[in-house]
Amino acid sequence: MMQFSPTVAPSLLSADFSRLAAEIAAVEQAGVSVLHLDVMDGHFVPNITFGPPLVASVRPLTRMTFDTHLMVTDPLKYAEPFAKAGSDWISFHLEAPCEPSAVIDKIISCGAKPGMVVNPDTPVVGLRPYLGRLHHILIMSVYPGFGGQTFISNVCGKFAELRDMGFTGRLEIDGGINLETAAVAARAGADLLVAGNSVYGAKDRSKAIADILAAAQSAAMVSGG
Image (cartoon, rainbow, N blue to C red; front, side, top):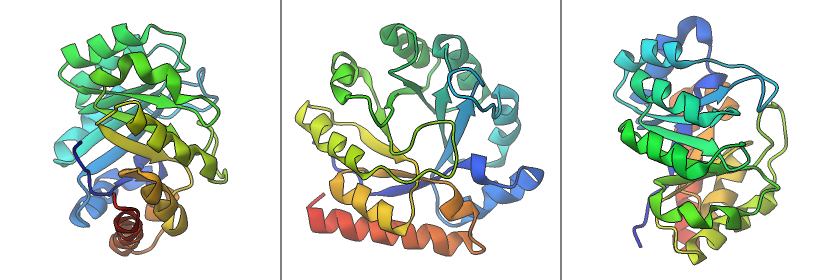
């Protein structure tokens, strides 16, 4: 099985939208290779964030991979617009009222890499039929659509479950990631750590990213990951 080194993926939603070009450059200059884009439709989750036009407008600014998390009721409808706008990876929720295989087909046909997401109280067994076709799986460690929540540590057991089920792709976690929780998640097997306020809320973004990454890498080494 391929081993992945822990990676920090800053969440653009926590950036200052009045100066997006500078905010994107700040994390790329810190060595970040993956930028996380949280898309909310106001229906699947209460909040509304941004759509394909914003992704298209910032795509020329960076070479970072755009990891787009669709918190939407109809991911089949939005997969292609986001892929065309420049999203490299597109994930959608198992909880969405859709046929997952059709959404995965659409994402792949548009040239992006598919992923699926599960909420904290959703068992990962429901992902089993799709594991062989997924590039990554995102485990939510808070409930999507709401800020200021506490990290739910018991979701970390899902990483071992997924490996036991034969999944060999990337394992991502999103929600409440900071120095302490990054170590907890990495020790459990997460290799892609979405960090919002802990990066963009810091005065020194480079130091924040380096510190989170160091904590995660140390924990992964201790766990043998």
